Length: 239
Image 1 (tube, rainbow, N blue to C red):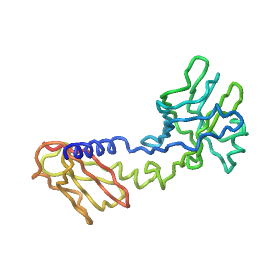
Image 2 (image 1 turned 90 degrees about the vertical axis):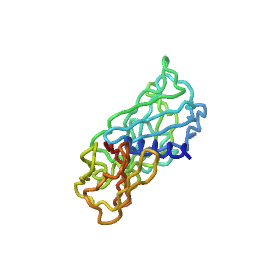
Image 3 (image 1 turned 180 degrees about the horizontal axis):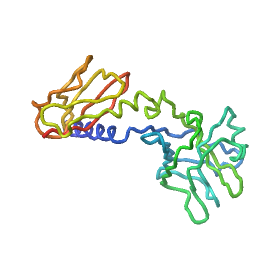
Image 4 (image 1 turned 180 degrees about the vertical axis):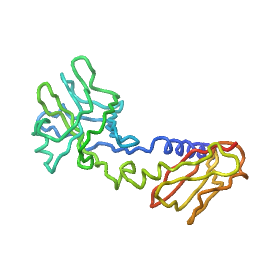
């Protein structure tokens, strides 16, 4: 039971600190002309907090054939079929580059991570393919599909969620009363959990902006705020 409570606490900490959106690329194996170039292993794309930069993570099990200049890109397929995409030069596709995956001096296999800024003036919701391509030989390697990041599936891109994440608790550390400040969203539920994951406070509907916490022992707590089917968790220290 203690392990479950610890896991719950760690998950709250993770949620409170990351608030990121992650999509796994799948359906690789699209190089039918040179099957040895096809990609296997874990490929994750993460839109980081704030939505200003994006990360490509290749897992320890990532593998493909060696090449002189294999690079990874995020691509807008723009309605092209898989066959059309595989036969279209990367320069003719809407794309931005993550980085060099493999070369004559860089082993293409294994874990790697690339973080780049999201280009301005693009609609990230149209970018649905992770491309691997050899620029030096202008040779298609392989691609996989992701679910594009949109406000519907990624809270970072949701204006209401962003405003909820900016909610402030003060004073923090607190002694008797905490105040909750949110710009425009009306909070529908407030819950407070202690460091072991036990709920010690709950308030639904017509939530007040001030909460009396004088009955709580000193220590670390987690405050979960909910509104419009969205939620955010904040750390609170009581002394």
